[in-house]
Length: 68
Image (cartoon, rainbow, N blue to C red):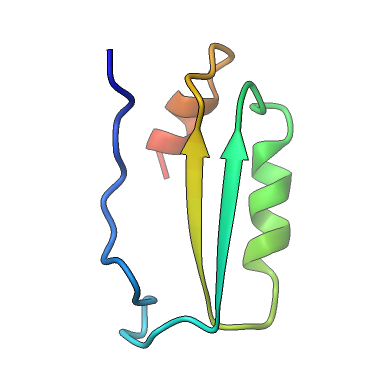
C-alpha cells in the first residue's frame, strides 16, 4: 500500500513567490507531537514552505495530516 500524497505547487508559497526556507519534517508515530511541531514552524517569521513526510505511522499521524 502506498502512502497518500499531499499535492502542493512545488517551489512556491501561498504568495506565489519562491520560499526563503524549506522545512522538511519526517515523522513516524508522532500524533502526540506533530501539531505542536507544525505550529512552531508555522510561527517562524520567514517566508517558508513546509514538507511533511510520514513514514507509515500507525498511531493516526497520517490521518491527522490528511485533514490539513
